[in-house]
Length: 266
DNA sequence: TCGCTTGTTGATGG
DNA sequence: GCCATCAACAAGCG
Image 1 (tube, rainbow, N blue to C red):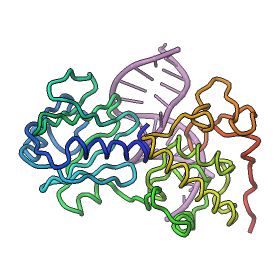
Image 2 (cartoon, rainbow, N blue to C red; image 1 turned 45 degrees about the vertical axis):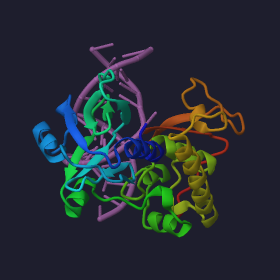
Image 3 (cartoon, chains in turn green, red, orange; image 1 turned 180 degrees about the vertical axis):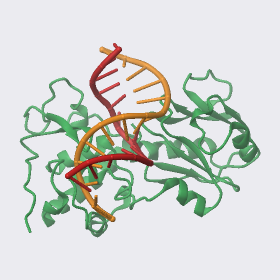
Image 4 (cartoon, rainbow, N blue to C red; image 1 turned 180 degrees about the horizontal axis):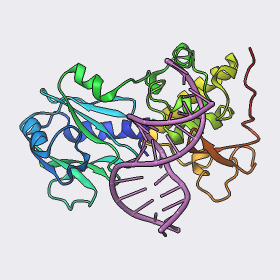
């Protein structure tokens, strides 16, 4: 789930729940989500600190504390939940921050593919987060062209490569490409100027609506609303949707609206 | 038991 | 170095 719009929603949860509040206690219920630190280390570093205003960078959430910065990555199944203190815990609540004011911020994650880090300074932050391209949510047309320049691979794996663009995941990439009528296997160098323009326009529109919903909305006129149906049809033209693997990920597209393009020669 | 999953990383081979 | 593929991480579901 967690792609740019989801993480944007978690940012709002974090800020509304924990922004400006003091950490009274940290309960580590499963240390399998702690990266590069122990439960005791996390408690020691954050107890008594006050969370500042969090920030999203691609699929990462960064929460300053006045001391170390808490970095969160949600993998495929992570989420943030704000709860009244003492309310029943979910089995997948891995870390609970008990806050001043009687609330709790909970890092909930079924699969524990990613988790929580602490960064001491910008250098450390960069080391943890690694190479990130420009955020897909604030990308100009020129920025998109610059990000794609020099890449010779297929369009979808390039768009979901976080070092090229930060924030797009499997679902969003399919949705954006469907809207822009571009085949996910289109070689990046084969894109015309007009196609890159459409890609940019539809990326912005898709992201805007998704961020407003806090996820990629599975609406009737969205590809996402049809991709899980056993025999889904394109909401635009009614053609039976095609399924396959592109860049190793399950991919859905409309074989009528999204025609394959040739690799350019030369 | 196997295959599959909306994320990422590292190994390997072309 | 770039790109594609695969395995691994982990947990649950059909």
